[in-house]
Image (cartoon, rainbow, N blue to C red):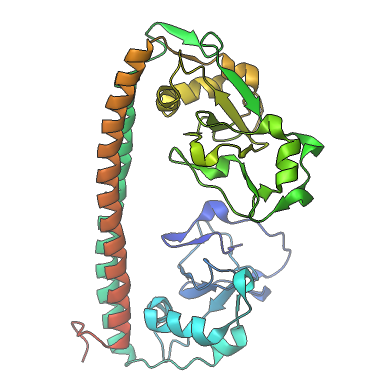
Length: 380
């Protein structure tokens, strides 16, 4: 069964599909998919309007679209199925859809299937449609290949950054190390169980920092994931202080960010853990650099608990071994790491901009071709 989550921009993500138990002829199921069908995500801001194409499933089993996905099957006498797919992706249809076919407000918006049935579509002859489809298939595949190469370069840059960081910090398996416990580091966790009820969360209060709010070494709080000042005062032992490192302790273990002055006094979430280094012995920026290196995160993962989801506790974290360096040496490592990070960020930013421009060009090409704004080879 194909859901909205399975309908991704790059195609169907079969890992996000789910199985549906049905005993009978699958063709009788609502949403039964046939090769050449298009489908459109139908609910929710951010995903509504995303168009997918079905050619076949990953195996011989039949496929269906779920109730949040609108199936579109064009009459082959009038509309080439692939041309119809590109038409649905065009800016002209997408703009029309959001202006006239969508109802509801905020995140509850939905696509009206009834209104969609009445959408007029101006198309050339089927032969010209085939020529346009052939042109777009070649051109979009070429653009997609360029985008894939850009992403490959980003992955190579990430590997380069990891290699450089490891060279700067040193490999804990091959150098003199001490544990965070020996460095005099303290650790605090977020509130557990009934200490913080779901009903206490408000909008615009004191932020509660969970792993989802830790992104690329930065803390990005959510306005709705916060508590009143009175609740924060009650949970004062879980407050973060400037200079702490906040880290996800479940799942993606080791993702960290330094708590700056802005985040001073925010709360450590239940799925997070805060590290409070002794700054005269261990510089927060140095520890953050070390924690960004895969082999140190793997060291944590190897000692974590949890059969299916890695879980780091205070004792495990304090046992983490890091290179034994003086504060002066740590400061030099941080300066070198900052230079590497600046190079990485600059190069990745340039590649991401190129990807964005390629995608804009791809979208403009589709729109121009299906609306007749450009001359396509082979079209009369």
